[in-house]
Figure 1: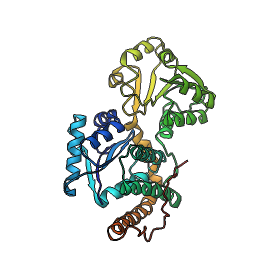
Figure 2: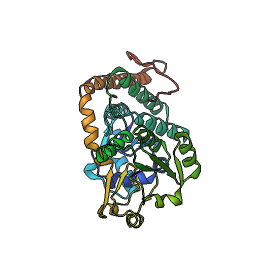
Figure 3: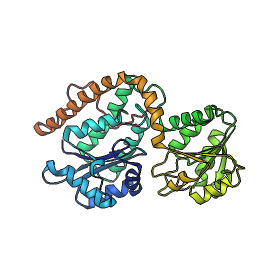
Figure 4: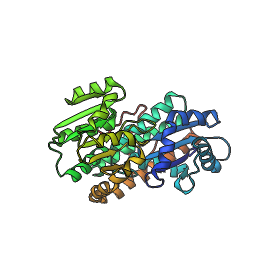
Length: 358
């Protein structure tokens, strides 16, 4: 299989390294690789991973190292042992595993399917894919959908948003009557807000750098929209602040938090940062009276929820192995005849993929 994979994720690399790569921007990385001579590139960047699937020139056995050197030069970071490199069928199996939710912080989570779909569609729209990578990513989405429909891998808390709210419940016991501020109005922020509403919070405020998005989401959820320049004033009264903005640099500084604490009458402030790059400046964690939780702190809850579904992993892996073999057979068919289709597969190939997980 003519594809190389470079990756770092929540298991392999500390947050500082993941944050640096995430800040580069998927489009920037993809275009830089194409300019540098790579033929194809799909960049999957999420809060827990940064992966590049690329096709290059020259001997395929060197693609992984060449890709790693190109990305390290672009980022200015030597990742060393924090990276993982895959080529051929190993890269295919890894992508199928990611799509199935087996490589996620939250086992079986659904967001990864839409994230893969967006990454692929963005690369395709930029003419950064060809027939092989088109079919590879279309198949990955179908495999992810099949794993979730054929196994119970997706039982329980299934997203970073839901686990973040579960963490808040463990801190407060009950969220009923709590005053909560959500920073951000994207997909994760909206899911977090919905889980908070289900938990009976008394007040929910939503703020976003783009006022219209904050206003529209607040209207949809019957929450309180807050202009971006006004959100610091709410820190004086909020019980919990959940941040997921997608900003390239922290939106909550130590200075802002200290000013808010001075008005809280000795009450502690709880911050949950589920953004990548991080929304809350690292030095905030050193302030007395502030309790900062990040994505890494969700791991214990995620592992606890996943333990109830460990038996489903082998069933999921058997599907991944089968479909990796089927994809390899399809690639071989291209060599011997372009009209030979995918063989022995229980999944129907589709020219246009709409697989998502609700």
